[in-house]
Length: 251
Image 1 (cartoon, helix red, strand yellow):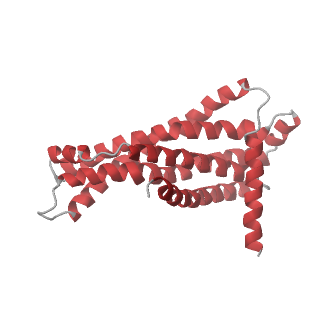
Image 2 (cartoon, rainbow, N blue to C red):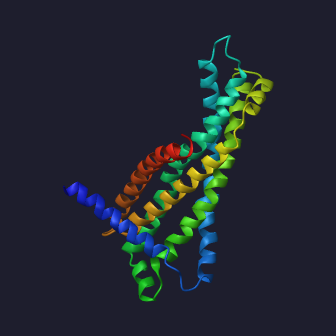
Image 3 (spheres, rainbow, N blue to C red):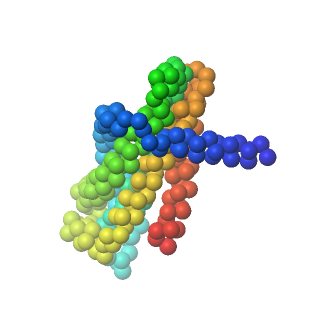
């Protein structure tokens, strides 16, 4: 019973927190510079790690698919087809967002948690500023608007990494066969599905991490614990909503 009460209590606190975050601000101008600052911190600073992860994911995916398709009755161009659809449907959206949950989520939670324990949030409240909206809303908007670009970049980089790993380094298939597979039976709706998932995951990462950071109580040790909770629960929710969205949008 205690665990159930804790779940509903946390869900209620999170809902009230979100209502406070999306409350109409008094001055929209003060959110502009904050938004672009968060766009750099959350989005632009994540390009490097997304690029690196996508290259290796595409390369490994192509090599492993090629090894498992050593059958004369299966055309080799299906390796490129499998790499393309795997990157679009799952790897570039779900796996990349799980990585970003660790990078972005921990940064967001620790930043807001540090402001809480050092009483900077209390100072904002005393000045009449809606601290939840001022601190969290720009982060959510920045993540929701920029994460889809990261995923699109991840798809292209992953496909390029697949060519690099499968055609150049290991010669599992030729470049012509790989390109033929990339062009085979492309479904544009898969891109829409992937971007919808990414936007939902971006909201989960920033909102959940901000919630745990905002409700940090104690000292520096609690800031670390809040960051850990933020990453863990964000990852679990990403996997849960990945299943839900797949059932709703694909099945």
